[in-house]
Length: 195
Image 1 (cartoon, helix red, strand yellow):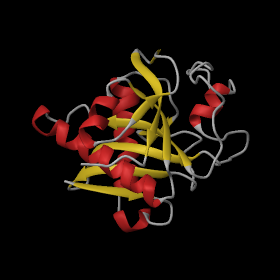
Image 2: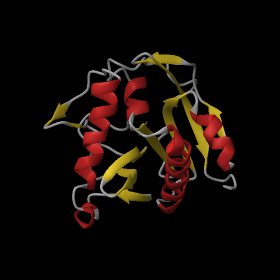
Image 3: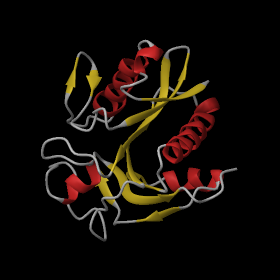
């Protein structure tokens, strides 16, 4: 099992991995969860899949097992910035605008973490290992990108995983159902010590 951080600058070094990650997102969010998201050729994508973002993938022999997208909060593409802020600004119909207790931050040291998934077919024997690998690599990649904090609209079970790795997560907004799943905005501190 490997963890890789993809960017537009390095994705050519990994063959089909980026396309396979978008296919895994399609399988997870559209096929399994029935979310109404853009797709083409069996790949899920949106306006935040730009050269400004990075994608952390856990994979084995070309098969994507899990992933998450990291986007700087200073990102801009047309009218869009990053997912949490754009939801707060009322630009995203599927996400309530009251998802944060305070105004969404814009700072080079804060990155947005979203589209976190573990593929449905990952067996229970390795699921925890896959989740831990994803979370650990997400934090290491974010730190390497200069982040001191991540902000993400994440499933409410994620802080349990974070605690196992020594990652501090603080609720940044109310719990809400998105696509039938309980989510909440969390601020993830990069200063905590990972085990």
